[in-house]
Image (cartoon, rainbow, N blue to C red):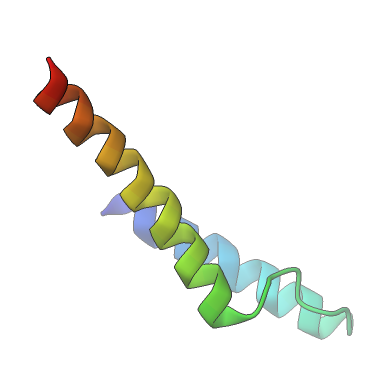
Length: 55
């Protein structure tokens, strides 16, 4: 949980800095970013599951 809080804090800090100096936010659109992260996570979990099933 500590990693989640630190990641959120770092992201919020970067967002504030970028908005303050009037730069575009360095992030993709919200929904596509969330779906990409979910895809990476579930793909990794699928490989772990397949290794257990095959072994």
